[in-house]
Length: 407
Ligand code: HEC
Ligand code: HEC
Image 1 (spheres, rainbow, N blue to C red):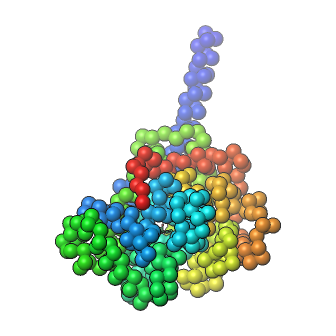
Image 2 (tube, protein in one colour; image 1 turned 120 degrees about the vertical axis):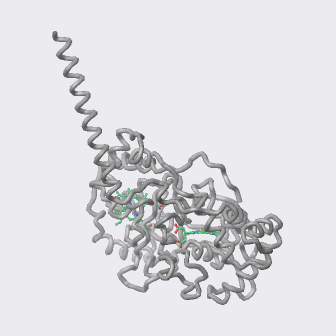
Image 3 (tube, rainbow, N blue to C red; image 1 turned 135 degrees about the horizontal axis):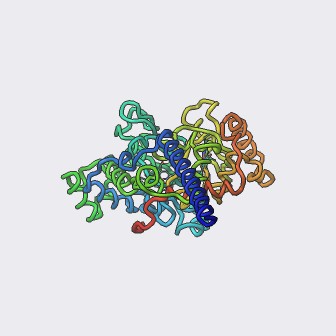
């Protein structure tokens, strides 16, 4: 009798904890859906295989740069989760990958290279750390103004790197300024260069039915956009399987998820299908030794809007494969995932003020001024909860086994 009662108690306790787990799982599923998380198929755009093949070749071709020395794949590398694994990108004159590239002494592009997971999927219409290309169709905003050659923002975004002086141009004769006129000259030159590659010429003919000498640069941009959309499309992650299928999470992942959508307030900004609201916020994050605006300063969104309220704000980064895309932040100032997460709620413990120059400190003070109004400045978690948050972020891992594409 004693034995029966104690096994009944154990069975009851077990089913009570299983019920509590079920309840917590349903709370997490509901919270994710409320925050705009959708099945992966609802993010994918249809793509055309001939355009994808051409885009793939162009993406890896150094003929896409005026000096024929750098490709998109030089910085957007598979090895580093489609970024480059270094804080600030190294463009023209750089050599090698990772730390070797930093040591090689090429020109610095003073922002952290963005990875491509989900880029250009349905609803992903705001590009770059400052959102300098955004919107769709008639609402599209970019530095090309009304001269933008496509209503598809990813096509326009793909036209930017080949005409950025430090990124892919260098000192080619008089073309050292970034104007629409100099861009047109460079685009024409790139079309001529790309047409000298027989594989690319064949792929152009297949994709557009036209000889490579007759296509315009925007055709290549279209193909590259198609390749990015196809190759880096969102597929089911463990988190999708948990929310929409029969997948389970471990205890730590479940707790991390409840913090992410609950008291951590992460989903106030990292929401929707890509874990980004595609809006601009201030999270204290140093701009590095260079900075888009010079001397370790980066005005962020202000560079696009000229609105003083945007100074120091950056686009909320999407979080797919985030464990593979270190360093973190708009200029890669944080090497560890835990540091950038702590910087959201307790920046003084991760910022080393002594090491910053006076202009760099001013840059941070400006970000701190705006940060106090961000709700995440009031969230707090223990170190155990922080590691549970990281376990949860690891469930957004996409396609770890994919084939490596090398430049
Ligand atoms: C020198 C390194 C480098 C090269 C070469 C390079 N990129 Fe990038 N890419 C970056 C950096 C750095 C960023 C972030 C820049 C910013 O936000 O200001 C970025 C961002 C992007 C983004 C925005 C992604 C997002 O989520 O908003 C797109 C799209 C992109 N690059 C496409 C390309 C294409 C296409 C090429 C080739 C034509 C290319 N890049 C070549 C370094 C590079
Ligand atoms: C107020 C909006 C907001 C909230 C809330 C928020 N973030 Fe962020 N997050 C950002 C912005 C903006 C950045 C980029 C900051 C920068 O570099 O200037 C960022 C950067 C990150 C990064 C680095 C990604 C990368 O690729 O560099 C991670 C990881 C991250 N956040 C996780 C979290 C977690 C976990 C939480 C909850 C504890 C959280 N965020 C809450 C806006 C937010």
